[in-house]
Image (cartoon, helix red, strand yellow):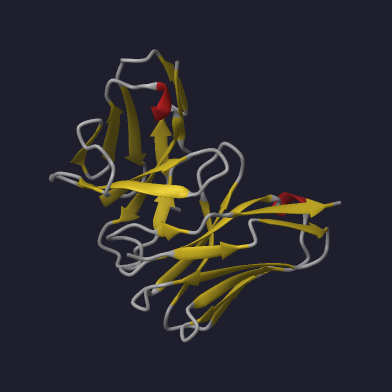
Length: 117
Length: 114
């Protein structure tokens, strides 16, 4: 089945630094990838839709200059949290949609837990 | 936009009993309704999904029912086992999930009591 890999699974950084999270579709091409944020014991909140070769579409309230998304190929999307602050600490999850099948089933990565000190 | 309500937030059942989790959605244009199981520290895993042209779908011990008129859908787990303990999320999508992502419910923490 379709597999989505996220890296790193855990990252701790100092306030003010930037952190990059990678999302890869391992055995399929993904025209669209999604980035979600999840706070403890809460649901997943869609942050942005990442389309290969074009700019990401951000949800209302999500700062695009803070959460930089790049989808340079059909198998890789990256989320960069710039100038991270403690309030950015969260569980970030990506998902990918299998291109061209019409099935539109999303496969999720295992998530990346960011802790900003 | 779409709004998905999920109940209950916590559900505790005895091992072997059945569990039912219910969701309602607001946008009648939604046509794809997946259910995800999320274990602690992991990403959501799709366990079953249903599209708006079907009223019920079953896969071994799990089933999903959809009532388009009432705009609600439910997850049914029979003969529950300890490994069923997790957080379950329902979701809805207008475009089938692939184009515009999913709107999730707030989740149900299912606890299977031995």
